Amino acid sequence: MEKKTIAIVCGGDSAEHDVSMRSAAGIESFLDKERYNIYKVEIHARHWEAILADGSRARVDRNDFSFEDGGQRITPDYAYITIHGAPGENGILQGYFDLIGMPYSTCNVLVEAMTYDKFVLNNYMRGLGVSVADSLTVKIGHEGEVSDEDIISRIGLPCFVKPARGGSSFGTTKVKTPEELRPAIEVALREGEDVMVEAFMQGTEITCGCYKTRTGGHVFPVTEVVSKNEFFDYDAKYNGQVSEITPARISDRLTERVQQLTSMIYDILGCHGIIRIDYIITAGDKINLLEINTTPGMTATSFIPQQVRAAGLDIKDVLTEIIEDL
Image (tube, rainbow, N blue to C red):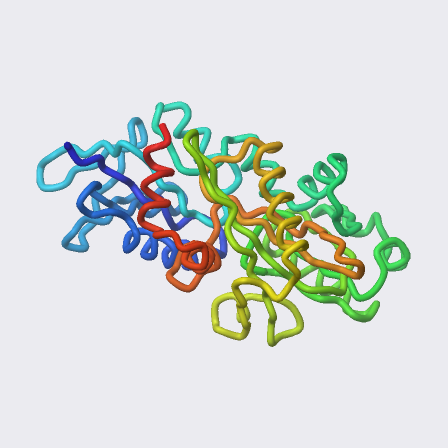
């Protein structure tokens, strides 16, 4: 069998660039080397470069996503997108691959764009009957059009202030007092043009991954997230200041409900590849959606590999199944 060439597309233009590079290294370690030729392709602004085996780099021709390796023109057969943030998680890169006819690992343009904007996603999911926190948006250049008093009377304290489009908790602040609100909005605006102010929900944070193909798929075991910090911030996510418990310490019935909801959301949105949905369980075992990650972290210690292992699956087989679902 002739080997397919897989491009692991990583990097990106957001503050999550380095996180993406770590996920790319994880995916490279997971993929079946006997089945695939593997290249990492780092994207940063207009610089698109394939990283070759000797560590050198080759410019990618954006007309067809090809590059030179040892005098040979390489055109990948498949793009495994692991960019967290723009342009790999907001639909832009997916649109490019659609135009050149290259299959890729994530959801389509519409789903990526919608799930990337937390405020848009929350309002859409609320319309489908999914429970989400109350929120409002503050747009750059219009910060003065809504007063601190109006925000607090609507959303309450404490609350979270975060970029509407972004991840890894960059620019996110838990606001406890009125005096902290405006500085938190300014911090979030440095990460993006829109800010979401979201009501605080007291409860247990969990996350659940899922993937489906034409021949099957799996909803993974649920992971409980116990941050040692004020909330699940960057240090908790990437510097070990968190306990991640798989399976989560919740009842079997609640676990089943979370998995059913995850599967339903996957189907309703028309997702593709691996996604991970974060929730907060509040009083009365109420399941509240936080966000949907369409390019979840894929280092050896990330949630998805943990959940794959807990499900008794091999991450290499899972990735192969996704790639071959053409």
